[in-house]
Length: 89
Image 1 (cartoon, helix red, strand yellow):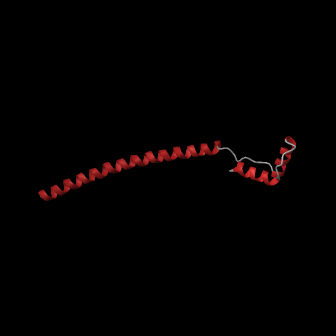
Image 2 (cartoon, rainbow, N blue to C red):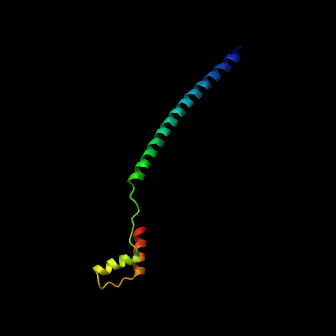
């Protein structure tokens, strides 16, 4: 009878520990769910405020604009393409 009571007491103690641990894990889950909600809200806000991709003119148009401002410029369409590639990266 003493052995059975001792075993029951051990199981009771172990069960209490499991309940405490389960409660702690439940709190952690709630905290992580809250963090996830906040991260999703932040991500949506960042998506809305993110700048859009700049639209650059065609290399020939850019070259014409350059030549209009600097008539003696030696730039060529290939130079304009490189400049636009640099600006887009």
